[in-house]
Image (tube, rainbow, N blue to C red; front, side, top):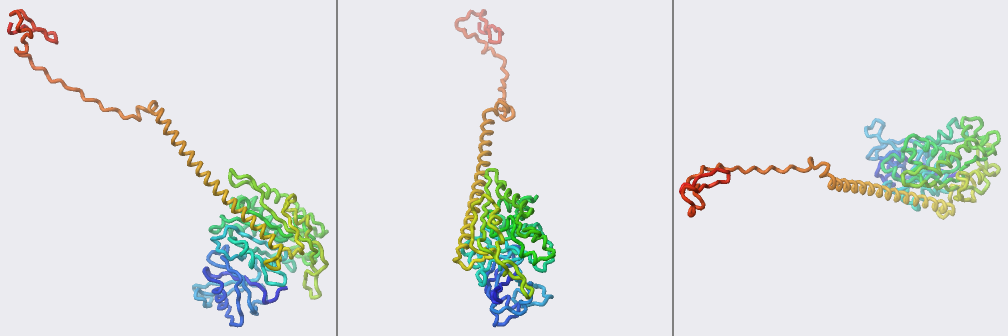
Length: 486
């Protein structure tokens, strides 16, 4: 168990624009701590659902006594001037401190506007969303302390949910947990810029069963925005010891007894034969999950169907089982056993080759000792490949959209040219009377009235040779006149 000094807290409600140092000062003033207690902020990132707030993870040099009694939340009122206000203050704002880590907790350091992929890590059964990924007996938490540097331009989250076994009065089912996860993902990706990012999901133990059921629900959803998370955004899945065909729950059944959460635990095995792995629910889920993963419809008419990558890590060490101590506390210190077999952990895609053995126990599959851990390097390699696939798909989408637009423009251009040529060739014959303007009529020339001929006009043209009295002049209109000189 980690020491009090190593206990990690989550702080929500940090005003936008505050740095790590500002956050330390802000919380110190809000809690009225003296100089003997130091606060160290380990991460600070934008809240995925409250865009004007930030979320921090931190620890205390000496955990205040007021924070030792339970897991929170503890609420502290603050103001913009960092002074603590009363509840009647008009500009009241609050900081919320807790250790439960339920829901999404951002751990990245890059600005959200620079990120191109969302990476969500889902914890397992009876586990803590932060502590599950933390080195045993140490403070190294690879999702926060190393992955943001190696897996840049990524938003990194843990996702936690309550599956406490001892003393639980919750009767929630796998489907209930999956529905909550669906809505959480949808709300996160509905924020500005969220839908343009790729999605990679990591899950440990029961978390993988939850993820599979959530993806099945997305596939069945009537809303396109939910189906798009599966068919367009999801670029890869990494499973750690996921009991696709069930797990050994023999040591866990006494912890639950007849509590309301017995149904949830029985989903992973047979309550009458705890080592029987073939759960009917899991068998049906496996068939449906394989179908949607391998045959997701293309999101563009010219896109070929591509199976979503799935990588499965499985344990090769016996794991300690649960045992009740003399003080009534349950501890994982019982006889070692195989909790999730290789066959069960790799059945997510039975014919796949992306299976990786890890010489660790079930819970240690997601705990890395430090930056140089060999298994961490393998996980990072898989994540980088999935991010590359997302970048390649985005490039293809842009190219397809550009070609589609270019083809549309070319079609209408050719159509317009064809119509123009057709009208030029046949328009005069079909529409000549309408299209061609009529020519203006020429005004008729008016003839001036001819004056009556005088005797000079009626003089015979042959006057020199005419015989007097006999010469007759015949005009063009047929009238005859006798030469007046003859």
